[in-house]
Amino acid sequence: MTWIKPDKKTKKNWKIQDIDKSLKKSLEKKRYTHTLGVANTAACLAMCHNGDINKAYLAGLLHDNAKCLSNKKKLSICKKAGLPVSKIEEKNPELLHAKVGSYLAMVEYNIADNDILNAICYHTTGRPDMSLLEKIVFIADYMEPNRKQIPGLETIRAMAFKDLDDTLLLILENTLNYIKKKDNQSDLDPMTQKTYEYYLSLKSKK
Image 1 (cartoon, rainbow, N blue to C red):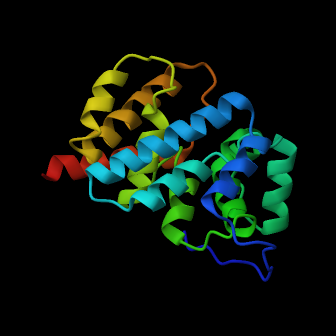
Image 2: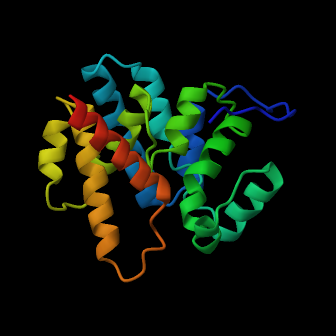
Image 3: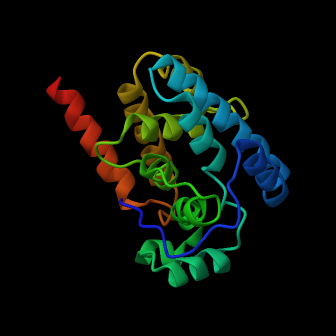
């Protein structure tokens, strides 16, 4: 997605320390702890895979900036900003936090880098042909140290420092299997399935 900044002047130039302080105030304590875990894990993965460490940390820090907003607020922001809302998202507005988070990162925190904005936007669903930064934030969100222990997590944590695409595919597979076992599959964004099929096809061609 190409993000076009609206005609609005931000009131300040945000430093990383300012963003951290702002998020500490706006996020619930558990969510803020998770946020720091993702930022640090993303930086480590970037270091391992020759990515931009500073961009990875910043994207990780901002990835859940809209997570603690009410569903009503998320829908309101989408309407005012002209952000598309699918029928699935309308029924389950919690799915909008990544999209809204990208928008707020741009208009509130003055982030102009499209790669960072996309890394925030797709950190829950992924998308076909993700950038290195997008993969890193997606994976870091799943495996950061504060995540509760789930089957296969240690394998994913070890794999992530060797092959991002294989790690991405395994996370997507686990996510789809988990959601499909639920009686109500309203949490399934079609983009997750598309992303899984893309990387499965990519692996079969190697």
